[in-house]
Length: 418
Image (tube, rainbow, N blue to C red):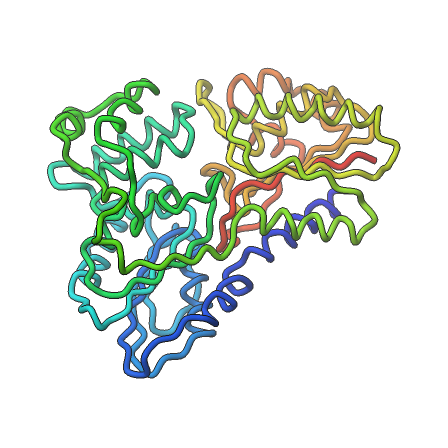
């Protein structure tokens, strides 16, 4: 069962990889023969997007640029430079790369073309703080939000107002034609939320950004509070003509991976119920909810094997001192509520190959996981209370480790009822 579930996951990831989804989107892009094309981008898929662009798109003009990705997510490119930097907390490497990227963008003319490659992770990689805010301020705020259990929409709302290149500000500083290619990792696929919308309008305000920080009880550095209180950092608002030159192409999202997983399961003779890609609850809450659904279907549904598929981005409120990410936390909660019920196997992984900040994509859960844990002296409830789902599944040998996948359409959760 583990081999089957991991194979389904890999097929889902492959369906959303840039080499698969970018070339068809580029097919309709027409540029003058003498066009000068500059490429910038950021995200966990940015390097792979740049490589796919180079392989599939030829222009008589000069193709050059710079993209920013997470450490370990680079790949070989020919003319587009790839820089690795910190994620989920920004660092000086990313800040320096942003300045170089911005320098390329502001010098473009109306007859030029800017191609922007964006995927999940770009919000923290494009870490160029607004004037008057330090990188340390930005790191402090981001760390506080990530630990608070705030939804990604709130985290990115704050980032847009504290960062010099987000919330439409990158496009506003460019005079060229702009073609944006997006791989979405957010629920709802709103382009203003994906990568915090460097080339898209945003209706939120600095007042709302400060309210988010206060609502999630995040300590606010003095400079950040003063900056937001004074109304600085405003994003480009809907209707602003500055962004009239922007054309957006969304090339993959959670549904892309879910559809591929469903097709692969059906090819194996497994019936599929797609629960949706919209889940943003706390991971442990969703684990309990999905356990209840699985237990009910195990009794009511005679058509098995049956798979339950879901996506989205759950949240973790950190109160313990353990290690883990949202997918392993979901699975540990699922395990506790299933109570070792026979006939239910599960896998939950992040499609970028990184569950939270750990080295695993997620984990696998078997009907005997709790029994094996008890034999090792592990208390599943205590592990969950301490946010130590990584330690729990690591001890069982059930972590799923893929390495960087170089795409990112968020989580894939799969329950198999046999």
